[in-house]
Length: 242
Image: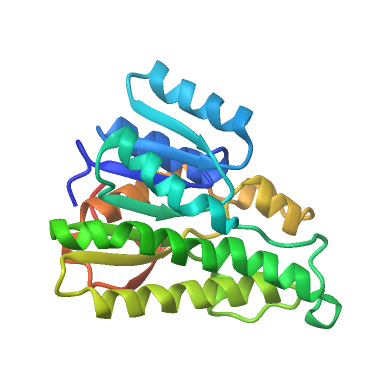
C-alpha cells in the first residue's frame, strides 16, 4: 500500500502507539485523521504533526458510541478524501486492577467489547464499501498476545482482541476479490499508559517504545501487498524493510 498521499484514519490517536503511528505515517506523506475521546490531548498530537510539516486532523469521538461512528467516517472522508488505510488502535482494558472473569461485571465486558470489537466492526462497515468500490484499501487491527494466550485477569480484553483478529480474517475472505486487505498486528509490550495501568509493577526499561513499533507497523503497511490477506503479524518479529 502506497503511504504517500493516502488518506488514513487512526483511532486511539491521542497517545501511545496511535499517536506514534499517526506521526510516522504523516511523516511518510499520508494525510492523517486522528480519533480519540480526549480532545485536548488529540489536538496536541495533531499540532505536533503539523509543526513537522505533516497533514493531520483531529476528530474527538468515542468509537464505542454507536451514534458516533458513521458521522466520524463521513467527517474523515471530508477532511482527507477517501480513507485508504484504517487503523483500529483504540482499546480499553476495562476496570483496573484487572479482575478475574468471575469478578467482571457484565456491563464492563460489554464496554470492552463495544470499544475493542463492535466499534471497529461498525467503522469497517462504514468505510470498507467505499474501499471495495475503488478496488483498494487496507484495514489494520492492533492486536495483543492476550488474543492467543490465556492470562488471568485479561479475560475481557483478551476475548475482545481474539474476536477482532478473527473478524479481520472473515473480512479478508469476504472482500479478497474486491481489493481490500486486512492485517492484525501484535505490537508487543510497550511503554504506554495502558500497559502501566494493567501492569504497574513492570520494568519500564524492558518495554518497547511506541515510536519504534510504529516504524515497524508502517513498514508492514508499505509491504502489505506482499503479505497474505488476513494475516496476523508480530511487530517484534517483523524483518521487512522500513
